[in-house]
Amino acid sequence: METSYKGTDKLITGIVFGVITFWLFAQAMVNVVPAIQSDLGVSHGTLNIAISLTALFSGMFIVAAGGLADKIGRKKITYIGLVLSIIGSLCLVFVQGAVLLIIGRIIQGISAACIMPATIALMKAYFDGKDRQRALSYWSIGSWGGSGVCSFAGGAIATYMGWKWIFIFSIIFALLAMWLIKDTPESKAAGSGKFTFDYSGLAIFIVTMIALNVFITFGADLGWTSAITILLAVVTIVGAIIFYKVEKRKAVALIDFSLFKNKPYAGATYSNFLLNAIAGTLVVANTYVQVGRGFTAFQAGMLSIGYLIVVLAMIRVGEKILQKVGAKLPMVAGAIISTIGVAVMGLTFLPDFAYTVVVFIGFVLFGLGLGIYATPSTDTSVSNAPSEKVGEAAGVYKMASSLGSAIGVAISATVYSSVAAAGSIETAASAGIIVNVIFGVLAILSIVIMVPKNAGKTTEVTDVPLQQPVPTLNKATN
Image (cartoon, rainbow, N blue to C red):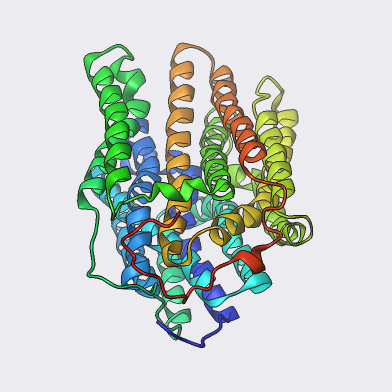
């Protein structure tokens, strides 16, 4: 689809607003668990499910949505995502019990699956070189920085206006995003052949991911040696094996595993998964300071204000470091700093004032590291993706984010709840946070092993123009 259109700041702003809608309904909900539980009268387990469902459904459908964006239009899929975001938020505005809460969270997850890869693909379509790295920095501000903004804003809104207002603001941002990108021309990958889709692969993937999530979330309640838990584990393992073997043989696959033959892309994606799994820290820390230390939702949100300021400030710094020394150094440094920040939040034996200071510093370090890591990682994944499959590749990259967050939250919440039931809440919080430190260490190793020193230095030379004709969309590009 030929066009001379060049990306504008209006397009960037619209995309950032669209990405922020995800964080308003995803991250903000982490801060208002006690308020929602009190208002709706649902169990803590139900709320944990509701929190993880958005990330889970986003993760399950994001690759499919990215592939669809390449084929039927990236702007069109972005608009579909924004409409679904509005519908999902309306469900939570009018929610009275668990049913509409669950439905709304599922719809919001599917909306995020559409918005995230399609907006990354639009960034690559209409920006080049340093302009693209700048655009991706702002995308990262909406994505990574949005988590801090919405964590703080969610606590303030819930305390002074009521938690449902969070989702009213989400609707407003979605409408603004639709207005700001309305003049952007459609972007599709060049290709031939009729539209095809891997429905069987999607079905296997959904069953596998649901089994995994239920296993992690309910394993402790059901008993780790119970028949149901063992069955869920078997379904997860067998499903993953079948999915991999079936997808490898398909010309049109839900996930093109040949993408992972590119080590920089693989390293960026694996580390993205693991650093998003650290989101479990936010659930544990926010719940602990409210339940164990008596903080309000607003006070808990204030603890992360340092994260918000630092991550927003450092994302552009990460972009500049990328341009000077390549992607590997800022990715490694960012992952190390974030892991240290998470680790200090586990010092729950400290008295109230000291622990408050430590958590504040931990959030600052967490944001500092993620801010440095964000743009180099995103640019590494985008610049190493085949242009005719950039939506699909972005979908896989963002699937790593969503599934990492869902699995990280589920594991952390399970560890926290299990230890809290058997011992002190302080020990439970420390145990939950130790899990996230392990995720951080694994992220560091994945970058060190897989991302080469020169990643990001030759972006403008090696990048393939988006509109380059390709033989077919139905064949993997190695």
